[in-house]
Image (cartoon, rainbow, N blue to C red; front, top):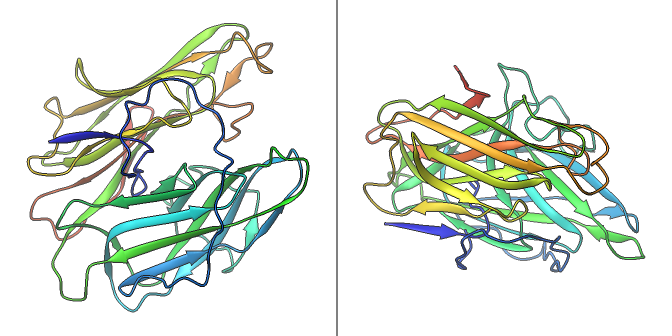
Length: 322
């Protein structure tokens, strides 16, 4: 069985709301945020990430990252993610990475999927609406180790004429101690070959090997505002596509047999239109800025039956990183 979900259960990590949609149409920023209640109770089993308030000036668009360490008492299997974002928040992404930043650091020098080839950040959870919830299939959990270092990337746009205070709360509900679960991990692609000519259209694509036995329970895409179509295919068979760059949605398989790539290859594709807007007079290439750059990503979550661990996989263009 499958469902098309909006917003994207992303991946983060994955990468779903109770509303359904096909990801079609255009999108505008979601600026109707909510009051983040830091006094509410965190999960009894699990953990909470609470970002401090950040002042966003009137008319400002900016991306911040908040760095922390998850000081949990044991290895946990997260079965439910949920989050709330205040007004002005366009999206948040939780990354796992062995960073060297002191806990509590907030800065703007953070790339969406930056890092060295031996220390790639793991896209763990994301949200594109003020209130979002993401459930794992029964018996599946995102494995989180003791002392896991993480950062929260937060993209803000203050469309008002006064400063705002922006923050986010992310809760991770875990299986109880001793409760068995099959560990899941992310499968993320990233394309560095984007080059959309000035005043023209363009596309980017890649094909990545999928290890044998891999079972996906969600797949989605990520791109910026010039994207007119994003797609994931199994050979010549379309698995997921969206024409809404801002809220692309995701495809979810919530029960056996889940989804396996018959071709053992995942092909992702993004199509762009650079004929209008502020960048139409210049070429657009790969990068983190939603205003001036583009991205082409497929993001999914998978597990392998009987496995006792799961390793996140990252494919650059068409090369699966070991």
